[in-house]
Amino acid sequence: MKCTKKNCYVDMGIGCEMGEPDPCDCKYAVKDVIQFIKDQGIETAKLTLEVVPVQEIEIPDNKSGATYSFSRDSLKRMVKSVDEINGFGGIGMAKLINQSVDGDYLDLEQSITDWESIYG
Image 1: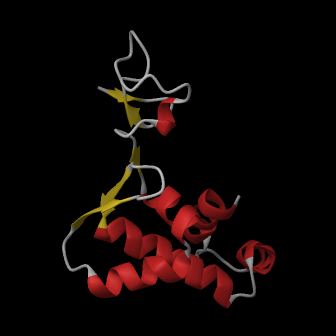
Image 2: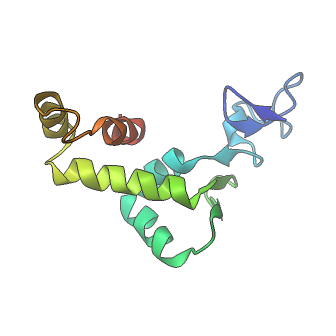
């Protein structure tokens, strides 16, 4: 069963199947694309897009024993968003530009949301 609070597989009535104090330390944890980029960095994400041709990507996290699991499309979108925000000189400048430009011309909302979900 997947824990909706911690994004890992646990028995909701008992806690972590492995007895870990934090269910995300569980070897059954499934990490998403955002956590992959946070943990591995944007350059690794770009490299993954170059070398992994499949649509559904699963990569073991050797450090924690968990697995990163996400779609190629979601990784592609997140990388594009980060590149777009960085291309404007960072999140502050992108927000400023987004507020001052008509939405029909330039819409950075999704890229800003994606960038903030990774870097806060």
